Image 1 (cartoon, rainbow, N blue to C red):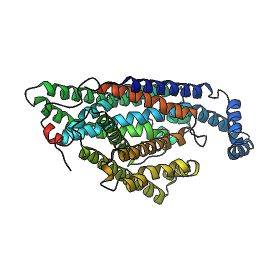
Image 2 (cartoon, rainbow, N blue to C red):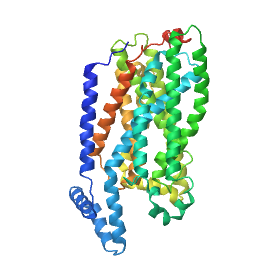
Image 3 (spheres, rainbow, N blue to C red):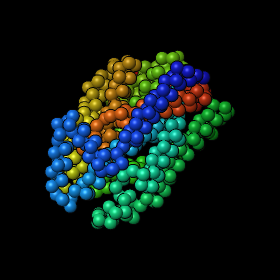
Image 4 (cartoon, rainbow, N blue to C red):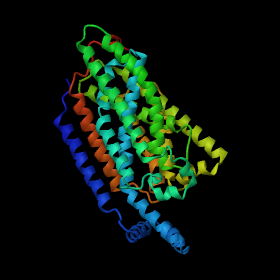
Length: 434
């Protein structure tokens, strides 16, 4: 039985406290008036060459355009702590959701190599409950107009935008929350029921629980593929409501899938180093690293397919999405591409390196950082525009959710034995060799 060490528990709590203070600072320093917003921009521009200030001065010469520009600037700066909160909340939630997909695939395919890792996956997916609740609360607060993350929720904006009026049947606040509740309910219900069957199988004298788990996992994957795509449209793509991509659901899926697999590998390596997973061998780590490598390539294929087709067709409402990111987010945009493709491609290509624990952990840290920046790139340009930088609120949000994630996952890992007893493939998994 795994014991949640007091040292790890204290570290996770410290991360949450420090992160909460950073987030609190972001909300306390959020501007409440146009004048405060202008002062913040002027102060920031003074240290960065004044380009934004010059653009603002140019806008001041347009008279009637002034008020709307200033209000837009105010909303962008007010969105900064909210966007930092949302990016970090979604990122850690998507790790758990990606792990859930990988777990369901292993169950539905009746894979023989992975049963030794099931308890690790079940521990990670336990974060779906607190993580999902937090994301849902943020969405509810958005519907209540506590922030301006989703511009289509502003009735005044919709009244002057024919494109948004055409999407009003789908982008309806109440319908939006109903869909979110259905998604979260379906994911959490499968996780809890599958976990229950997994534990019951250990005490059973037949394989009925295992067979039922196989059936519900196969059915769940159909629900998952549909709900995950719709979730990506609702929670991420709709922050840019004029833009769309038919590949976006798959793109987000690839990001969460590789992030989930990476965390499975890192936690497995940690637990093995503490002698809690004695039967896990280098071949298990090698297979996880192969998935990290393969899904990173798959993510890159989707990224390039989406980028190339949109850039080549040069349709204004589509290409604007990338223009704004290349112009205002050059470093995170291209840096993310290097971290998510070039680095894992060069480092994890060698089969021998996939068996070196510290090497896999190092690669995992880079991959996770890269996919956090990927989520950052998806959310920030539409919510804060060019008024972005990674400051105290962004770092605070990462620390808070990292602490919460570690606390919740490792607490869940300590509730049951880490190795299944009666899984029909447990002996195959124990003697797995690649």
